[in-house]
Image 1 (spheres, rainbow, N blue to C red):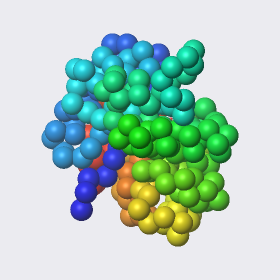
Image 2 (image 1 turned 90 degrees about the vertical axis):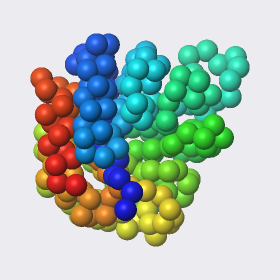
Image 3 (image 1 turned 180 degrees about the horizontal axis):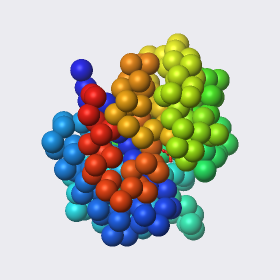
Image 4 (image 1 turned 60 degrees about the horizontal axis):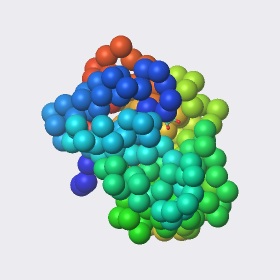
Length: 222
Ligand code: G3P
């Protein structure tokens, strides 16, 4: 069975920027090596190239635009992400929502460059709609639980189970992540047992004084 993906979104937390981004990527690399679990990080654009250059972990952008390279000031192209060493990108995160057309264009742009697409969604129906666009992953995150310290795995297992079913009914090849409040190995195990291919998380790792300790706990029941 392939390893699940533990994807740590560093957002724009002070504790996930600059030297701290390096510290978290280093911890991710170490724990991934020890456990055999794939642990990716999604740093700010500023930190993306240094992190991909210095560490052997999958590096994701937090957003990508569907634009071609060229005269598009301020846009983040899939081509620039590929050159910077990214593995893929989040799309439509709860804190960076897009139109359906923009999500579609972003998925296509990543595909052309051979990069992995992770569309974030907020419920079962948007998860099904996202699956119809053919991304690599759909990541279901109930917005009310994001950053709350209350785990989706425990507070709303039904949304995970139903989203996995909704996504696979549309396209069985699309993998499913879940996130919001994920903080322990138990949360990850519940998510896996409900049929997901991993988790998307942020604050429990990024804000920890010892990210490596939290990461070790996250993979402990896999
Ligand atoms: O992108 C992951 C995120 O939205 C979940 O955040 O802090 O609840 O793990 P958090």
